[in-house]
Amino acid sequence: MAFKKLIPSLKTALTRLGFEEPLAFQQQILSKIKGGANVFGIAPAGSGKTTTMIISVIQKLKGEAVEDSPRAVIFVKDKKAALLLKEKFDEFTFRTSLRVYCLYDEYRLDFQKEDIYYGTDVVITTPSRLTKLYNSNGIHLGQLQFFIVADASSLDKRNSLPEINRITESINKCQYLVFNDVMDEKTERFKKSFMKNAQVISLNN
Image (cartoon, rainbow, N blue to C red):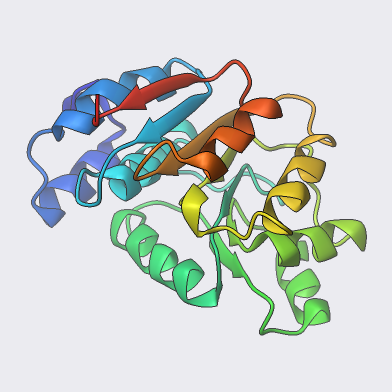
């Protein structure tokens, strides 16, 4: 999947940001994601994992806001990681109507419920906060197209992994992506649940 095959607003953003050709990792993985596969994306820092994730989400959602329920959920470890990822999304979505929202524990749950109620397309969240919001009927996940773990090694296996697995049990059909620098123990754990049939695309092989 070359950059030239992307929607116009995404191509414009890539050009503006100085991206001319896909990196080696992106050449391997973007077409797999576009084809609908569940994928482990394994590559060292600087290989383009975050950009791959952002490109894939914007492309699949066609750069357009639709109704109220989120169509992509991305798990990160904490508030700092959520806000940093949103900043990266903002660089690519400036010519789209996509609504990107962050959920984290350091903000009142009732305020977040209200914000989500008015509509969002992409939710960047910690596992604990999405779990609380979902259990209190504060978010609808019936329209999800992407369920993404941005950095598997950063998650606390005692709490985060079980919370993520429980949420997937309530999702009917969705595409799953898990990214990490290496295929470590925490990443392997996802193979026992929603990633059991996923393809592994690794730049480390």
